[in-house]
Length: 113
Image 1 (cartoon, one colour):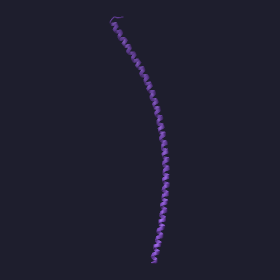
Image 2: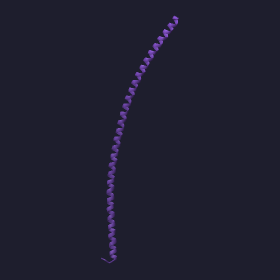
Image 3: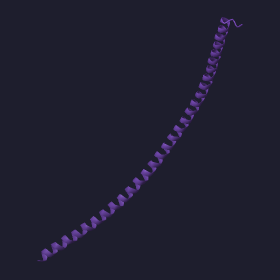
Image 4: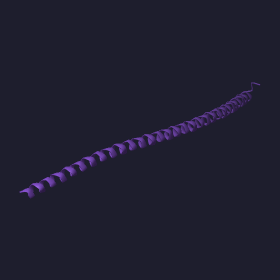
């Protein structure tokens, strides 16, 4: 009977030691998880900051390119307007000259001059 009690006591002690070891392992695992999550959070924060900076610089570059393109378009439109105005004036001048020539020819035919 004593042998059984001794065996049970030894088994109980081993079980208690195993439980203590298991509790320490769980506590260590929680601590490691906490540190890992904190490290991951810091990495994500740094990555997002870098990404934000990269996106902001890209947007700034695109705005600069767009502004220069719009300036170029405005200057091209101004030169196009000047060309169209000049050609319109020439066209109106030739039409008026043709009208005067036709009126002169009709007057000459009608012997008005």
